[in-house]
Each structure stands twice: as C-alpha cells, then as structure tokens.
Length: 451
Image (cartoon, rainbow, N blue to C red):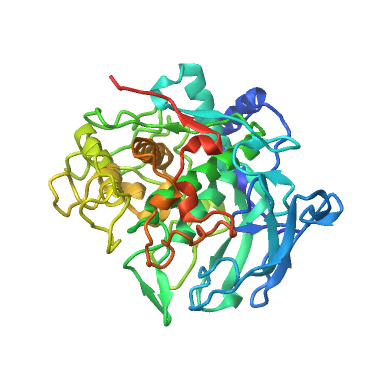
C-alpha cells in the first residue's frame, strides 16, 4: 500500500470549492489516459532508505512491458564522481533498477506514453497553448476550476518526500499529495542548494543560473501539462500563458484571473485561489527537505504583492533585445554572461549590458510574495502563466535561429551539461533534447499581439 495522503484534505475544502469541483467534473472528458514518463517516486515501489530497491513493475505480464516491446528493466548507473548530494545521477540513491521505455512509450512501467502521445500506439496529438485573454469567459472559468481541482485531487501514482536531515536517510518520509503539489515539489527538489562535504552551496542549482534554465523549465512545464491531463483524464488539456510585454501593471492579478491580493499579500477570498496552500513553504532551512505538516490546513497560504517593490517591469523592447542574441549561452556559463540569450532571458543582464535583475527574474520580483522565493514560487498559479511565456520566447528563439541539440554548448557545470539528464527525469531527457521546436512534443503557441 502506498503511504497515505494528508488526512484532512476533504476537511479543508469549503463548500464553494466542492461546488466548483462538481462543476468541473461535469465538463471533464472522462477518457482513458495513461501516465507519462516517471517523475520523482512511483507509489507502486516506494523507496526503502537506506537500502536501494528495484522498481520495474509489470505491465501486461512482463516487467516494463518487455514482452510487448515497450521497455526494459535496466540497472540505474551510479555517478562517476559520487557526492553527498543524492540528486547526483538521480535516482541512483533510491533505486537499483528502473524501467527504460522504448520509442514513444513512457511511465514507470512503460504502460503509458511520452508527452502528448496517446492510444495503443502512442500517436502524437497536438495541443495549443493560448494566451489567457484569448479564452472566452466560460473557457477561463473552466480553466481556473481545472487548476484548482488538480491542486486538491490526490495523485495515486507518485510520491513526494520530506526529510528532517538531508544527511540522515532515516529522516526521509514519502507520501502522496495532489497532482499540482507533486509538480511543485519537483521544482523545490531541483532548486535546493548542492551538498558538498555536508555544506550547502548556493552558487547555482539544477534549474537556474546557467544554461539549463530554459531546458529544465521546458521539460517541467510539459510535465505539468501531462499531470493535468492525467488528473482530468483529458488528453486535449493545454496550459495557458500570460503575455506581460505591453501591460503597464499586472493584468492577471485580479479575481477574474489569478487572484487579487491585499496590502499584506493575502489572496482575496473572492478568488478560487484564496485557499491554496504552499508545498514546502518552510523551505529556508539548511540540510532539510520540505518541512511541512501532513495536515494541509497547517501549511502556509501563498502570497503575492505585485508592484510592492518599485521596479520597472520588463517590456517588449527587453524581449526583442534578448531574441537578437544568437548564442544560447556562452562561457563561463555563470548567471550573468554578455551575449547569452539564456542569461538575458533569465534576467541577469539587461539590454544595456548592465548586471541587474531583468526579464524573468524581474517579473518574479515585481509579483513579490511567494513568487519572489525561488524554491516555492510555483505555489503561486501565476508561476505557470509567467514561465509559459518564457518558454514561448525560447520557442521563438529556436525557430529564428533554426536551433537544435547541437546548439546547446558544452557546459561543464554540474547539472547543466548538454548530456546531463534533467533532474528528476529518470534518465529519459538530456538538456540538449529540449532544444527543438515544441511541435515535436505536440505543442504549439497561439499568436497574441496584445492590446
């Protein structure tokens, strides 16, 4: 039996939330949809630290669907240069063997498909990511309800973990949480500082500060899209982006979209998001993972204080400058690098060559509250909307320069190399794999010119 979910999830719901769930369930397409590539810990084979265990579940009578040609059970390689950080060559600290799926098959047992592929033969299905203001009022209401539903609906297939001490395996605990919270945990897990000789190093992490910023988040967003599709049993579901290039303020920080906030940062009770609680909200503790109560009501609500910090918002001119840079990244591949599209779009150097907060980083600062706290920023639903726009800029850059996997530089930084597997993606996707048009993953962006 998998570890139990937080015990009081239903008790924490208001009658309004329940009504919205009933509305959502009436419009969801109840189609059969298999899980995609495994992220984090499959509940069918929970880790058993300090021992490593195999995780090659049977699919239709054979491990990893081997007899059907779907996959193989292979040994998980250990890192060449082991460190005290268990994410080094993830998931070797937890599993001895795991399923490696063939072709377009996916999931922890190879019984599913890769992103936006469905059916017996895992055929490609195309979805379109639209700008939030392109949705009709009915579509917008349904979209927000779907986000909220998957924030509260427990995912029975995957576990998240917490640890009182990253150096003591006996303190690790694994449990079920919602589809959306499991996705948030991946961001938290990847952005924890590196461990080196029992010390946390804050120079960079697996998802920020170097070349992998764009490729890591691209896979991350594809993962959320798939989690939502599994949650809703709707393979046509697509995420929505928010284009802030021409907006004087935050056009989405209101109850029509992602919630208005008061002066202290609390979300208006008139918003569907007012009850959202943060996964791993108490994140700023050395050598721990995700300290939080299993009672959801004890978790911190996310906050937003857009415009509280008086900074100039990034705009279309800033975006155009970044898109004019033809190199994905340049040595020494640190946060701030001149002439680097990645460094520019992440927001370390502005269009005047000055090292300052701009673009992606500046929008996080501008929104304030939870969005300004990197490990837990995705607890604010604006995170998704914002990062999808950044991914759209990445897509524009790829198409403008006909970029491909060879465009990813030979970055020597840990977790950011072209052949490094994206943590935590179970040896399926390397960073260089993400430098290709999204159409290969069945995704396109709508055209939106703004007001």
